[in-house]
Image (cartoon, rainbow, N blue to C red; front, side, top):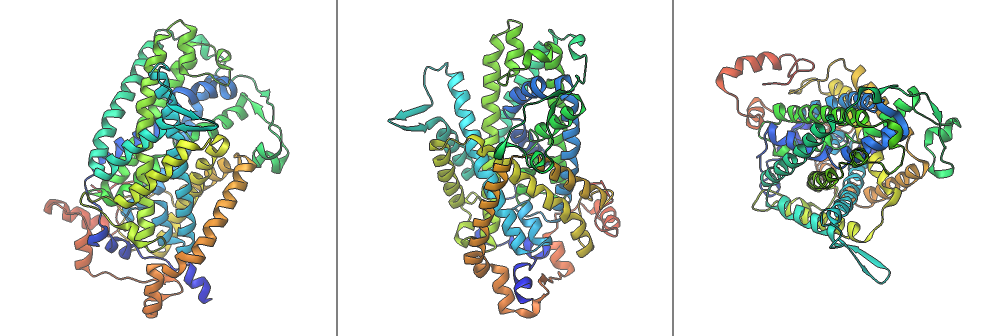
Length: 538
């Protein structure tokens, strides 16, 4: 019983907020809702909008790929609701890790933190290699961004973008946001040009049939097949309604990244209001862009012309003789991937920062420099990701990013009704409507997507998690700040749930400044637990 209460001890929301005031590990509050929306669009809109749309339309869904994006956006939106409530209730760095610590307990928080380390590290490295490939295209293959020394290949282009991003993040998140804003403007301009030029080749007849008749697909075998196919022994189909649903599973990953916005809650001036706005604002913008691009694409050419597995948005323009658009698309992809690397890098450092501050990793890593950023962690993450991107060929390891993200989504979704029950007194800047129905639907949607990942991805994930469990019991459990407090002051814990009651003065100290005219309205909202369902405090 003592063992269970130790590993499942929870960290109170009040203690998490108090930790943000430690002078040696305090992040600077510089970000606004506009900054967070830019970060969200920056990380979600990458090169995928130029490649994934064409590939999915040509091989899986046909013209209905636009509807697949809508289905995926709905599933993603359910999870976004849960992230918004948590981020407005626990405005602390760490995202899903911090939320899990407040609801499920320390060992689950460690597992999700270890999972996020895998997700972000691989994402930074994989996307940096993609950036390097587009750099080669923009340079016209005059300079090869990959150097070969004997049997060793070194991707200096990938290392270059990671180094640039690392310097920007160490200098400050506000500067990083400004650079992201410029890059986002470039890729949005390229997307706008693609839509305008593509519309001149649009033919409504290319959208018929909108949902093509289903066709049997070649099913992968062995460890390469999906877990769902292995468990059910079912065959796969392309196109038709099943193809549409399969396409929704594929394009869901085009939305992955909005959750990184929640990792910056501690650096936001008014997190209760601005974090939900940043999450929903970025998700709405990217949904409109994805649907618009996929509609124009499938209206330009028959979907059968995109059947090649290597088809991209440029393929549709090339079929009309507009090859000059390819170079512009490469520039847009280069700008898009630059911001993805930056925001994923940011998310990685903030999760590690939160874990180090809690003692689950060496506490010295949580030190912040003169710019209010965790410089030590930024350097370490930069070096590790640069080595991975520079020398490792990832192949199917890219799917590890997907499974890591989905596990985090499931736990955050399930955590909302749990925290509602255990801490109904907390002020919530945003409340998920129709609890527990919405969180359960969000978790089920993510579990379904996880079942469609390959068996080899699941096996690698289980091995990574097993390594994490060993590290937790060998180091993190003994060095946990919360665990040391529990051992030194056992009366403060009861069954693993740390009880921290704040006085009204403490709550006022940590709450964002309110205009006097807003106090009456806010008091009325707080009487109902901090906001009505589906509303953000203003």
